[in-house]
Image 1 (spheres, helix red, strand yellow):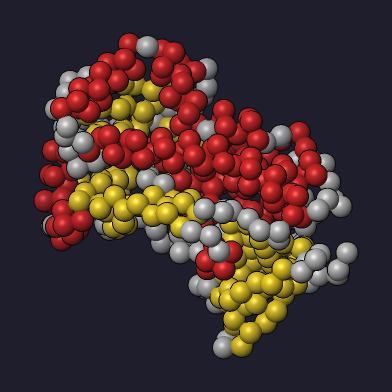
Image 2 (image 1 turned 180 degrees about the horizontal axis):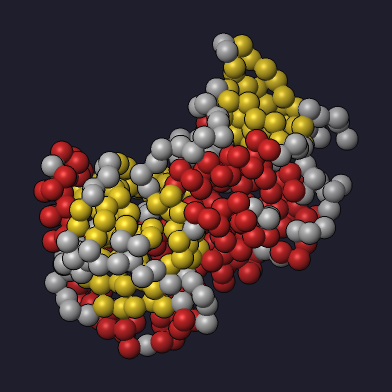
Length: 403
């Protein structure tokens, strides 16, 4: 086998890229990570809170990363699902499925900062920031990756290349294939706030005429609110005074959380669904948002990317040290198709169905709410779907990770 500069090159030092680098290092790989922005151990400023599912927490525990993260975690034990204009609601409970929690919320900056600290401290990982991916060339037993840094091009040889560089992935573009994109014509407006109703480890998902409105509990009386607006409405919402925005938010959630105050900075993100037609070539693979972008309802996007990493590590472990890289990446891609398809459809159905004003869909939506409220079996199935555990069990073998 050709001697290479490193075993794996990871493009992108976001959450999924860092997790992939750490997972590969713990499997004995030499890893180089390239990031276009400045990379530091400081906790980035980010107004979002992210929800990690039970499956993602299981992955972090298996990689022995969880102890460094647990201090930032706030457990979510219940989710109240409701719809504007109706009295009924559905309570999804961890206790009902025999679990201690449905997942945990994290300040996004703390989560990324902790993973980046672990990357910097890992002796098997070399990080080069302010460096951009240019192109790759595949050879019989290695891949040559071109990196632009300080105006000059450096070539790095590696066994394989991972594109974890987000929705605008340059690795995916170089890989070829087509990209299907669906714009929802909406923006999510995200902000931290305080409510008079304590969190008590309960999250809220409320469907309005414009789309989902989520409240992620972060501790005591603090929440991260995520409101989906049409584009013009999102611009107006971001331009409102703090008091006007808080009163609008109180109204949109139907007063369920009482009086709101202490509004933090508002962030606005466009909402879309995006899917790459191919995930891999002989020595290149794309993961996370480089492969799929889904609607944020149900907090599925990041968790889908974490399952990408876990599946890739399992396929590598099952295949053994001397296995053909092409075969490994083909097995990975084929094993991810079902999860990608089902998660994309699930989030898309929630996004499209919750906004529709067609009488037939309104009736079906409200009948579904009634059915879930009266059926423990249906609620358990929904929790299993949202947790990602069922799909994780089908493709990940944690018993191999200690080898």
